[in-house]
Length: 418
Image (cartoon, rainbow, N blue to C red; front, side):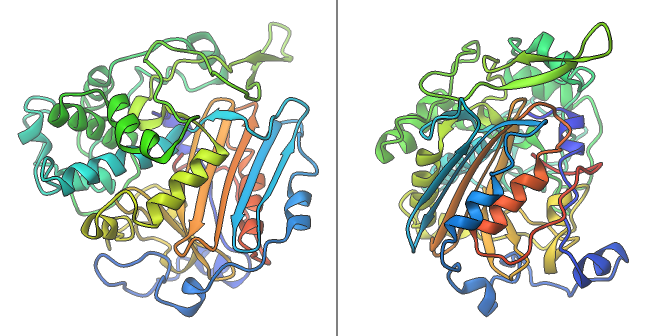
């Protein structure tokens, strides 16, 4: 799970020009239908295929990397018009494995939706029914579906796993781990954020609880379920859920670092490639660009879910967004942008893409695709701090991959998601 600072700081994302002015002025957006496709997906712009792949433009997006705050970059774009893979940094293999952070949530949601299709998990059933005693008695009923689309109202993480939120704290505690029950118990000492189903607030505690539900109804570990249901059938050889105390990053990979203050006030670089995967079902998985592309392709083609559950991937609840700057862009600003598993974003050229971002200290990743799979992109950067300074570069790569003539003015903000 991400620390409170890590979640709060993600990115303020706004489209340049008139849209930026409208959002900044608080101009209301049109009312949207319940369970709407986010980002105006019914429009011609949203449904059209991505523009031809511009390999030269993509190469330019990483030409200045590594920079002072990014030691490496890996980009893979694929779809109609061919494939392009580029790296920056002397130690970045094209087939690198990396920690995918909150992209793990997509795997968790997929397993949960499969269990719903098998009638082993009821999306309208409550956490209190499946895991009695996990949530305080004063909490209202929270459904499984509300966990998956972040409308549960559960509080965010506490101080147990984040300390003071600094790079120094993480470097010192990078091998430490906690059980999912400890993480949830620490979080629910706080009151509910809002009535379940009334708003959307991206929150890693939702996915911790979802992972616990998966283990409860299957009698198997989350790692076993991902392996047998997703990784093995799709041939994802680089994709693993590490054991809680396994700090290694096996196979080819780029080193990851964070910069911490030294005794003399200078910045000292600490290698954090080896770190605890304690975020587990919420953010602890390891994968590669090729595996994430294959997973996203299979998921959007309907290979992993029956039609009823597949529809949940593209159904975004029509509720307000709470403290999540990812949802403050485009024609749906102020509204939810997460479905039961994916995030939707409307790019400056009107194209709607679906996917997820994720991060761990030393890693900042994204996987996005058009719904028709005419373009897919996977990005993995190696930032040296946890402030989100890499996000302008991240979104410049993403928008370029989808042929947008504009990019987002992405800046670290006081609220958001990873």
